[in-house]
Length: 242
Ligand code: F6R
Image 1 (tube, protein in one colour):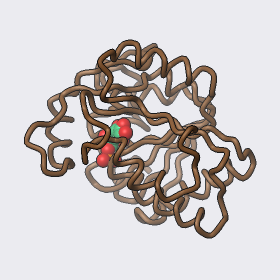
Image 2 (image 1 turned 30 degrees about the horizontal axis):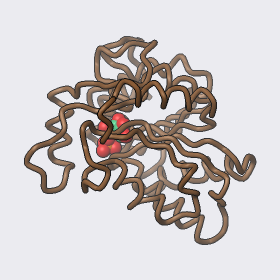
Image 3 (image 1 turned 180 degrees about the vertical axis):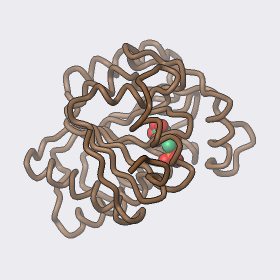
């Protein structure tokens, strides 16, 4: 595991963007795994900027997203479909047909997940971007998720539901379930970068870096990955042993 501590959120986002642009510049048809949430918003701004300045070309890139609420309409303002289009896809030159998102509208979640998993097997992810839940979740692999888990329908933990309520816009009823890539699907990526920023992530980062591998803290499974880069800011790293 390589740990990069940056001074603040902006620097963390810039470091992540330069890593991703190196990968795409080396391999224009790279497969990128994207995450949602607050953490990667700065990174997505940087990527949009680099694309505008013609420093990255997304025209041959394929994308996969980690997760989606379930059930949810694509055009719901809180869907990850909306999030990704608003914050990234509509602003860069990625081709619509190269975008892969789990379909929160499906009536057949099992089939949706297994066909996503098949697509993932055919298109190995070159770099997977991850955020980190305060309870150690990655994607929506909540505490208790197994190392061998694949893309599936999951129940969100009460803690995640509470946190998400604050993140969601204008919604009285929030989704209790999600479709999520599993730990095994995430671990199959060639390279993983996990981003964390702010004091509220300090405990989770300490567990990830110094804690034992265990399923009640799913992010610790990442320690088994041979090419994991953790990019944090000072606040997220504030509880680490020096
Ligand atoms: C999002 C996702 C989640 C978030 C995590 C952190 O696609 O899978 O695991 O990365 O909940 O969210 P933020 O960045 O909002 O703190």
